[in-house]
Length: 406
Image (cartoon, rainbow, N blue to C red; front, side, top):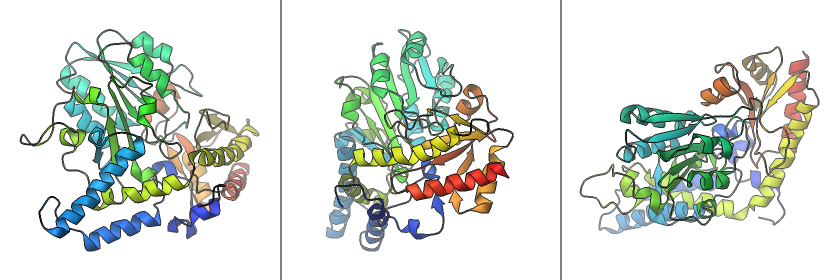
């Protein structure tokens, strides 16, 4: 692929983009690379056997699976024993909460961000209930552009804090939270762990868990995202530092070792053919510079945000209003004054081939408790990625303008 970002060349890797649907709901799941589909098909047709046996085909299949696990670790800049693969981030968070049952004692405290997808909330609420410990909510006083503030977090923390959970990027707002600063704040309390949901961040920026550890490799950290939102198969992965792993109880068989995150949390949930396709995703991502991607996406979101800001009497933007790529990713939510979000999206779909979404997107606590909106109707959300084009966004603006003008 050429050094200069070429969106037309990028789109050739995604067969679904040749259909009439215009995909503006990528935060719910991106389109999949053709190379990934081919790899999955090849595995099922030629390597669909049980792993770990001594015969040649099983050895070959085991290597393909292991190569997939290594690719996950390499991509996030971790060692293989620091990552685990599962069917979804929701499931991995649930597994993590079970494994932390003994570490979260009745006299400890858990701090949970209200800006998160429910996947990184429900399991911790339930764990606090099971253990009878204190649950504290970390929110924001800014209802229009909520952000996670370290001073607010510091005011919630005590020497009893055992766990803090938060999102790198809200799947509703698109605003980027400063995870490095949050990590430093969390680790002001000895033994406190940080659990980060990076699902909405990973499709837009490179993931480097060592960089996020800000040279504090001895401290407890987990970081998770979904590969099906990163142009790959429907699966997820979680990184956990060695410092975090020492607090986990094993969920696996009693005769298995406990020296890797896979043995601790995996529960044999890593699908063989999907895991074998991860090297194809990583190879593609290595061919498209992330800096070029973020610059392209900045242009895309600027088109829509500029239009929304040009009509303040009609639209309300939720989240960072500027298109600055240092502050946000192209996950853009808005409401239309005097109109329900469902009505607006329904009319867009009736009058065009654009696929977008309305509602709370599983972030009901954010939408209702902080933003003050009806969690059923919620917002209109447009979520773009690097294979979307400026022409598509301008077309969407035209359709949206016709809908709100009618």
